[in-house]
Image (cartoon, rainbow, N blue to C red; front, side, top):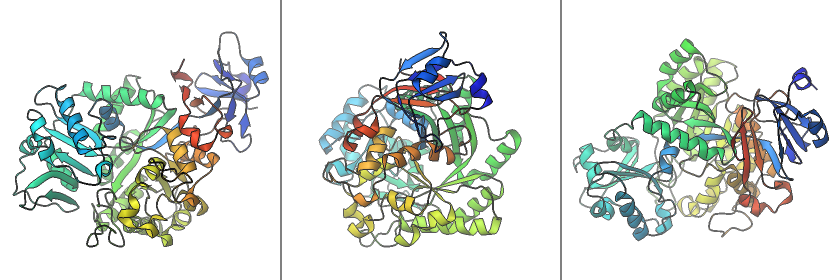
Length: 535
């Protein structure tokens, strides 16, 4: 027992639990005690009860499971908060339902207010892309700018196009697509870089509105057992987080990434004020190689199976990606890059390998976000190069319903290849990509362990050879997520001296059928020794 554990006055204790610690020296226990904001003791219920004074809070877990607070290694946190209050289109199954939901929501907002988010999925109704003609008549007074659930494709109505000054003469954009009808008119769908044409017309949300979105996001993820997030966002997002931090309003720990192209601004910021603290850390830069499979904008080595003349594209040139990565790395910053297609992944791995050779050894922890469709020859490179695979297991059971028709069966074998990545000795960090997917780690664990697609057409698992174990999935949401954000010294395992970030689950996941893991519930979430969800 260390000095802190011996001298600490316990303020909160959980007994009668199945404690998965993530600590190899003591993997399991049945009780845990907290002193202030740190863990004081992990042991037996008898030990913990004996050390706990009457003034402390004593929680009986009733046989439930206690785990380190989950880290969601990939979120768009402010967007997720805004999406909670916007039109909900993710499960709209038909064109008619899509239109009906937008029409109903438009009646609830003031004239002139923009309707955003949405998270629609055209695969739900067979793959036909929506057009502005579907919704113009039901949204005459509100600009509409609603995204496909992957964030790489948006639909604008006539009012939004007018606000952005878009006409049929609008020029095409490199690294993006403006979908047009047979007569050359924009249909309202904009992909990847082309989205900026409309986005620049959207007014900034007032600070108070952004603050409310952050509060909503923090409370929502707290109910899912999430205690830390890695935000893939903007300098505007960082300003919202800083306001909350200064006001002591944060209940979620945030690792805030800003755009890779702004590496110089971040280097100057870090030089002036450091990397931050346990609540809000900076130093990460997020870049993009390509788009997504669902939008046909992922960069592939071979054409899409359903579009033989199309193999996607880069949204940034390899030359720019190398320049930004190299300069960021020279300044000690953390480079995190979105790459989905096999050509995109290979390109970024090549850049990482080149930069490491040129800049010399250091603890750089390069990350590839999503790493969805990996060429077999590149799988082992994640391990040999030490590149973290930051992946989102929910995508596997979502995209698994339809992705084979887009890239074929053979290439799909390297899709969401979690087992292969672990076998290649890669660090696997799990996240959600919220707003794109729900930020619910228990659902993500279910997805990684079962690989049962959302339509239940793969009861034995979609490419079941890529399943991971429950222990591996828990580790990817805890210790590995902490490592992926340079926080492993304080978070990710339950042992004395670590920050008291803890989640309590209503059942022991080791004793239930894997297909029922998604039915489990979080009963309590503790951050910094304080209960932020549950009673």
